[in-house]
Image (cartoon, rainbow, N blue to C red):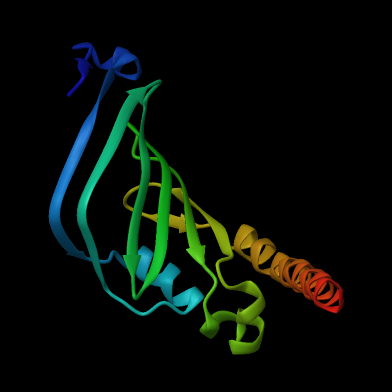
Length: 166
């Protein structure tokens, strides 16, 4: 812990302030049903999360605990979670999920490899909720991102051909 202040009066709990680092060494856990559902949406198989050695910084202020980005690899794909949880158990997280061949097909994946979509997670710790509207908007923008990557590759190929001719 770097610092810790916890008011004794319940009405002042939102004034609690603390910060520190949670150090994980060789931790491996089974995925939650919510994370499994998210991973299934993008075609990532894997029910076990291997955190390996991971430091998670946290800061509590204004009734919320915010963590540094939590980065894990599942089924060979990097997953990132960032956000906060409230003292009232409310969630405000973003899951950064990779585009996979299973989600978009092998041909489209060639243009989208490395692209991620942000999926908001709201609700509370007992009943987390995936914001499906945001998920639909994110996947709808995939075509735009694929077109942009294809154009960039096309322009690069044209420049390479011009340079070779000289």
